[in-house]
Length: 192
Image 1: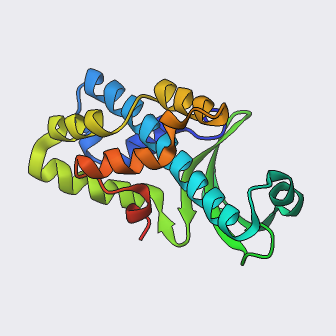
Image 2: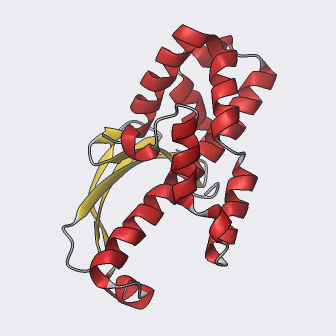
């Protein structure tokens, strides 16, 4: 995920002006926890899609990948470093799904700095959520909440590898349950 996403930039944008108030140690911890949050949210979303497809079409990944079509349907230069790439994903006979990516170019490196999925802007949504939480509980309160809900990216990647190897103890749906248990909206609830 680090190869495609600029997690540090997304984390900074999502925290908004509170980034400037954070100490260097708070920034590092927040960015690490934010990376875990994004990875776990992605795992949960992919697992949800996989389960929906399996219910209707069976669990054969060959069928799914044989019919998977991803195409770029639009491109817009936003400024001298950012562009918006609009994609359409088609799986089986399901309706096409549009996802837009804001990508940032730095020398030879191009990374995603925002995702707009089903009209929901990831950075704007997180910034609004985090700002409201920080207003009520302070930055340390936000960090404590994130510590209780999300794992650092390395731990989330271990869960993903365990999932692929069939370890049922890392079912991404348990992420939603643990998030709900500490009062954190699940990624599905965030996308409404």
